[in-house]
Length: 95
Image 1 (cartoon, rainbow, N blue to C red):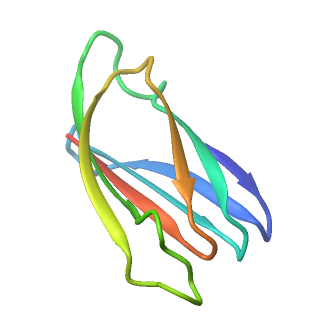
Image 2: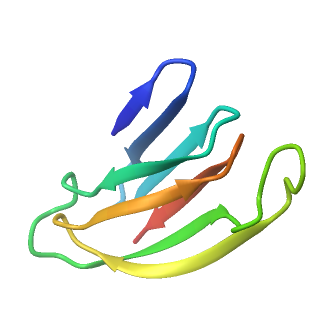
């Protein structure tokens, strides 16, 4: 979905033989906001996305185990701005 070699990457992958997707993103030692699009999803359908992400106080060197889980509805038109902590990342399960 987006990347800068050595700095960050956000990628999506469809589950083999299923109508489910997985999105993941990681960052280097700098905090950033990932711009996640869902335009690869079939148009006209609504999916449930479970987001496993860094907590508000997460950091690879000070609080690496801080995380949050939330669920949102997404469509092919959804655009998500997902914060990533320094040295952190996120995973999204879309069903």
